[in-house]
Image 1 (cartoon, rainbow, N blue to C red):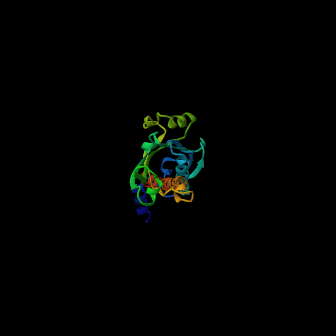
Image 2: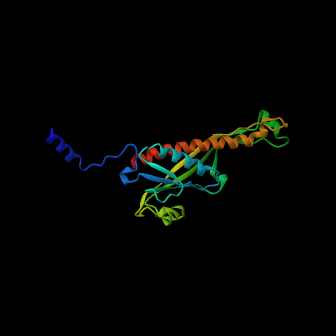
Image 3: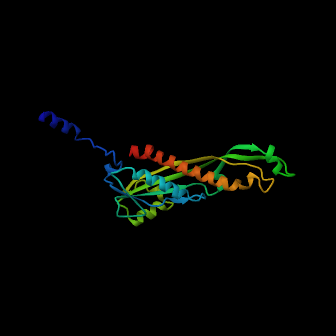
Length: 216
């Protein structure tokens, strides 16, 4: 039995065992700082939504201590940047339309009928940059426009972008009287869009786990 056990250990000497409770342990990372993701889009609050879901995901690993903010005493830091075109009109694409007939027609007055967008899709990208033993200048470089050039940085563990997609259906109702349902179209649609962004953030976190962490 002793001989067999010795042979087994010798056969496994060339392998590293990855800890299931910490996907970053193989790189010597036991603590990770996650500051607020940088929002370089015209969409408000999306950076904080993504930060919340990514932090929640990473905190689910018991062998990894996650710290909020730019704590440079951590073994590594994860810089997140939410990116998109800066034109909101180009950012939100219409996927479905409804013609202004029926109760909507009454709200037009003398205007001609037209198509109203009812389905919309919003596409962003999120860049994840992980730096081991971070310094202040490393963090500032990661947040700058030069971050795409950090692939060969000696401390770089990750520099990858993932797509962020949020789709939602708008509320469209008539506005012909002061009691019409359409008077709160804008308020309802704002709430619907925020829920879509929250759902998109959760989907992004799952994608980050499946595509990045599980292959890390």
